[in-house]
Length: 145
Length: 218
Image (cartoon, rainbow over all chains, first blue to last red):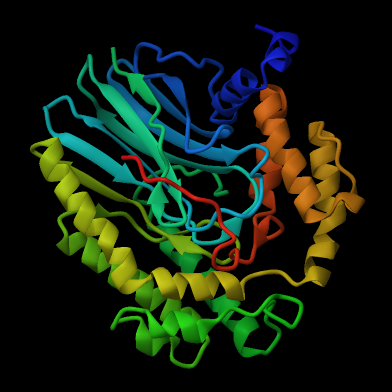
């Protein structure tokens, strides 16, 4: 995969870009609790990206990103928020809601958090972003394998 | 645009938040607030007319002090606890803004969603309007933003984004967003510029009706 091929398809390039912004070089839902996922959100170039860091079934970090491309780069997004959820190794349902950022911003929003929990193998960690009083469509997932 | 975090429950954060609140309090009380004539006025009266019982007295004089801001956040945090979630410590996310995470562990996804719904509602009941006014009070004036422009532009140029000071904040923001969508390498390099300058990229809330539709889709 190279930059030339990315520019041929801006949307695809964007998806990969978000995965990269989240700190992962892969866009696939990788094994061993370490990978990233991307989903087109509530407009053509509104993208939510999610990444999970970890080893084995132990998840150590989760990141969520949301950005808008043209034609609605403006106006600003306010009350930015993110959350992630999944199934712990003991079968309990778990979610973390990241702290909201009330400030209205014009650029990509990104949140990351440390976790340090074991998740059940064969399940997914799902991530979602939102702003302006609503959760945005598009839920990237990463499989725990 | 928060800085990278190292843990969920780090007590030092509370101290940092306290220092940030004190410093911002000095700014507000000394009359040197960033919220000057160059920043569009926020219609606090309209917010006050539709706010919760808890937030009304905090907004009554049209200004949110650091103490009132912290009071609202702590009340929201307590509400989240009562809803059955486990909140973390308060921490700073730059631009004098403070926030906190919360975890939910439940026997089923249904139960988790029920707790989440209650915890989400705490924001509206205890802090959302106070946070809105507080965020507005932190906005930079045009002059303040102009001062940051060379450093932000230089940072973005070093990261490989073709921006110039003449682009202005809207032009720069548009190029930043497009660059993130276009080129993964640039995206990685741009993020530190955003995180180092949260105030530069913070703007007033769009006027009623000027925002875009945002369909909720859980």
